[in-house]
Image (cartoon, rainbow, N blue to C red; front, side, top):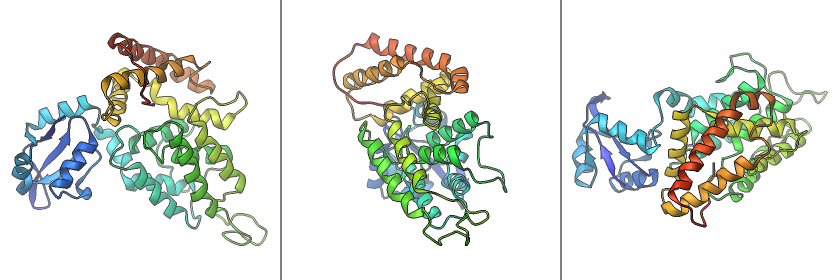
Length: 338
């Protein structure tokens, strides 16, 4: 493990700035920054912005002074790099705009969104962070025939299957401590706790005839119960054949498996970075088990479009990764998940 810092050559706010990164662990990066008194406001998805006057302090504390090019190369190799094309969509403001479009005008919804966005930006997340949330939401949009990204102004709020699927994806990794099964249960419980108060009472957000007020989203107890179920389903990614919304949620969550080889390789590095505390032998065994379980599914993707777009490439990616792990030797134990 190593902390790296490049020269202060980036001008802004009347000074120049360096980038402070870790080549293996966000936890290591945050611990180092905390010891130097660098606040979390200076953290930007994969690095800390360090003013020129603190550069020497970082080097004296143990950070390696490297060129900007070497810093980027080693950050990319670590899997912790968030590419420029993904940075804007992963910012808190952009995510909140997406959230507001899911439950527009619903009293209390923005507070829930604030909490969710803060959770998705938790510092220990390397793969299961805001870029993953953006990817699954965009993948769902593709499956539903919508345009990815923030909906256009005036676009109707989602309802029915789409509303439930989008909410499930917002909550599906809202709790992420790296414990299979327990994370999904905790995330499902969070969905229940956050969404239940948003279900309107006899008069809340409703007109006299009990219809939703114009332009205001509407949640029912059935919606909340279904979101809770869908979040739990992401523990197995094995919906029943007639579970249409379950198939959408699971396919969107697994879409990363069918990505291009370079993107898949970055995903693998990010997963390893989240489990940097796990010894290599244990990680290899746990990861291999996950890959074997995924390959044993009757089909990785349950929607026709998901199978057409991602199945063949996903199987190739998984088998290639598994072959590489097998060549390194397996040992019992471990629990690294997708």
